[in-house]
Length: 446
Image (cartoon, rainbow, N blue to C red):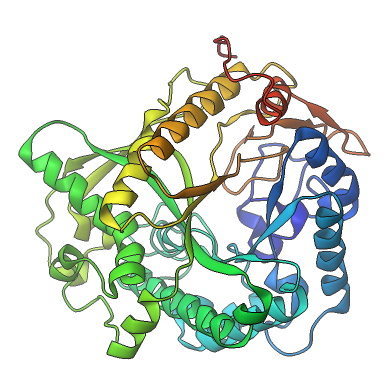
């Protein structure tokens, strides 16, 4: 999460670089250094840049009065990108709900959020839609509900015992994730309906939603683990993708959750199924799943227990664990087979290493090379993938990260000017984009 570009405001207390000298107030200071950074993008060979608009920066009180300085900043950023031949891809919401709406009515827990989000989206379309033609409504809402309302380790930090991973002061892990997911879906479809009705014909843009997606595999070849992996697929991604493409939640979710899962009206289902011009995905690694039956009644289980499966995340940090590139190809194949081969933008794909690695990030080069090779294979196999964004251009102030960053460019946070330096991965990616190098040697880990 890039606090430097206004993505962290009220959520920044959940950001952690492991370095007390760095905080979300300034971070990489993209607010002031955007011209310099866009030159860096151009030199690297980027033809598109994905950024998020901060609701709090644009409308500080969540609704009503617009901050002219916020509008000015995003206009400057967008115009500078276009002046350098770089296409802006804008995300409307990425974790940073204005605190006033959280305090007033519980934010995403209330259906009131639908109208307020739609009004905020209206401001974005009106002010920037003449130049921004790629819109993402919500960034990985499946991660928002899991981290923020069940585990309690992401904003707004809500959970309840025994399910949360944090010491939450309030929350209900049993019910709130389902409520928030429902409101996210309805807010998305409402904003898209507005865009289609009021703007799309004259602005000629595309609009969709982004999801966090792992390559989900059974832990063993047992019948139980294979079934558990299918359930996990439904709970982690089908929870959102089934309503967006089929108009309703997955059957196994409805069976396992009892009365906790809200229902869509016929008109809501219809609006949802026509709300995706493209699907954005954030993909990083594998998730292994084993069967884990829960016999408690559904009103005593969180969504993980409703899933009746245990998730085992594969590490892709500098511990030496290799993340095979074929995982991305398998994810794209799954989306092609399960959801009618929708247009896809890979919005995030990257490799974390400790921020102290100033130059020689060989494992990151290897990761990018292998994933891009497998993307090419997926395209040859018919995937409707339209674009790829590496995460991230430079070191950022990351959500939930402890010392690790993903930047192709190293940022010297100890330097008053926050100077950027190319890592080995930046040089490799630049050569790749300019067609100068299609293969890479294997580098040792650091």
